[in-house]
Each structure stands twice: as C-alpha cells, then as structure tokens.
Image (cartoon, rainbow, N blue to C red; front, side, top):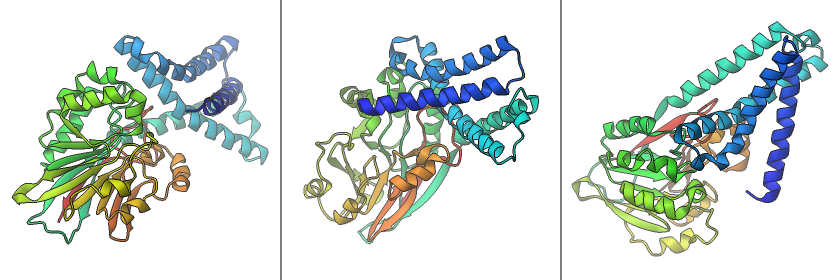
Amino acid sequence: MSIIGIIVFLLVLLGSSGYIGWHVWQLLPLGLVGKWLVVGAMLLCFLTIFANFILDKSPMRVAIAMYEVGNSSIFIGLYLLMFFLVLDLGRLVRLVPKSFLYNSWAGTATIFVVIVGLFVYGYLNYMHKERVELTLNTEKKMKQKHRVVMMTDLHLGYHNRADEFRKWVDKVNKEQPEAILIAGDIIDRSIRALTEQDMAAEFRRLKAPVYACLGNHEYYSGEPDAKRFYEEAGIHLLIDNYALVPLKGGDTLLVVGRDDRTNKRRARLKNLMEKVPKGYYTLLLDHQPYHLEEAEQAGIDFQLSGHTHYGQVWPISWIEDLIYEKAFGPLQKGETQYYVSSGIGIWGGKFRIGTRSEYVVAELQ
C-alpha cells in the first residue's frame, strides 16, 4: 500500500471510529463511567488492527487473539457505521424518533441484537464450505472422465489454523481427485504462523498431487519464505511455468501457473503460451482476475482465479462487481471457460455475509 493509501486508510479509520464512538456514547443509557468503559473498549478493539505489525514477535496465543479481535472489528465497525448512517437518515426524515438514539435501552438492545445476530450468522456461514460442481467439456482427446478439485484463497495463518485446515483436507480427500489446483493466497500474511502449526504436514496428507500459483499474499509474507514452504509442503509451484499432469487412463492435463501481478515483471501470457506443448487440455491458474480476454486470446481452455473473495461481506460485493469484469462465478468467452472463486478461506474476520466459502469439484470430460 502506498503512503497516500495508508494516510487515507488512517483518516477513514479514525473518522469512522469517532462517528461510531460518538453514537454509542449518546445511545447508551449508562452513567459516565459506564459510557467510558464501553466506548473505550470498542475503540481499543478497533485500534488492535495495528497489532498486525507485531504479531510475529508476540506469543502465538496472543498473536491469534490480537489478529481475531483487530481484524474482526473492521467488519463489525463497517456494519455499525452503516446502521448508524441509516438511523441518522431515518431521524432526519422523521421515521426514527430522536429518543431511540439517545440514552435508550430500546435502541441499545435493538442494535446489539441485530449486530450480534448478523455476525453469528456471518461466522456460521463462513464455516460452512460450499461444494461447487463444475463441468469442463473439451473436444481434445480424453479417454475417460477426470475429477479435479480446485481451491483459492486459503489464507492459512493466525485465524485459519491447522485444526480448521485439517477439515478442509478431509473434504478434498473424500472427493478422490486426480489433481488438486490452488490459485494463490495459500498463506495469509505470516510464514511463522504456518511453520509453528506444521501446516506443511497437513498438505502432505492430501492424496493427490497439488499444483499452485502465487497470490499477492505470498508476496506480503515474503516470496522466498513462501517458496520454501511450498517445497516443504510438497506443492508443485508454477511461477510463469507449466506442468504436464498425468491422469488416469494415460490422459494428460496441461496446467499453466502465472506469477501474481504483484510482480510487475511477470511474463506476458502470450509469451508464456508460446513455450508450452500443444494439443492438451490447458488450465490456467492466475490469482487475480484482470484482463480475462488474454486467456481467450492465448487459447486457454479454462482459467481459475480468486483474489476477490467476492467482497467477503455485502455491500463490498457490489463494489467488486464494478471493479472486475467478473468478480465471482463462471464465465464463458469464446471457447474459454472461466471460474472466479470467492475462496475457501478468508482474511481478517471470519464472516461471510451475502457471499460464501467454497471449493470447486470439476469433472473434465
């Protein structure tokens, strides 16, 4: 993030926190000490986001707690901000009485129940992993049908920990895939969080070969460290490279993995495709779904991308629909199929509101 971006973020964070804190102060039917305790605790939770800079130097349990509190508060704060804006607008048009927002047990209880209920739902919705079926049709020679599991955006680390990842591995193994493809952001932000939980051992429990490309978070965590982790985990890392993946019955799948666009010097897809063998069903892993027309122009059969998380929570999903040609779901351009996944994992708070966590089970025929 640029210096200007950081300054804007800080201003927005401080302004939003002040607006929410002022409203909560006015709303609570408590004495001065009670108001200070509640508002102070809320603001402290919001400010815990800055603890991200010291997580790797903190004891593991402390780092986990700071990550969960600080990052979850971003999403809770977003909904409190929207809720208070709607109530202020309602008060201006005289649909909401002023008494509802000042020293009000009714207002306090209403907002508490709505926010708690919404985020309990968001957490449970996140924990549920949707199984998405996808059919990949091809006229290229295939002797039989093949099953491939695809994932993006695992974001393993302080919040998506080893005990949870173990359940994902069990789900994937149950599908009995011939190959597992991951389109970036396996790591959330810290290699330390993966090594101390021995995440590599969980990857080695997967019963099919794993092929993956880099995402932007692998760069945030440190690209050299990420590469070492991939090697230890037994993951075939494709950085502007390809692999011929053997399938049952003598069939072969060509998997191409692009470097993440964080690297401004990554190879152009057109140049990359000039070096690959021809005649195979070709699947492209490209973490960020920009310039989708390039895959069609390069003769790719299928592209898997992620990165967007589809905003994680509404209404950010609406904003992403404006940013990307396709922010979530399947797409067809000419002879090329695409799927932009909202990801099986997530960064920050473990909430999904208006979006889903998913993994893809693709049948190639």
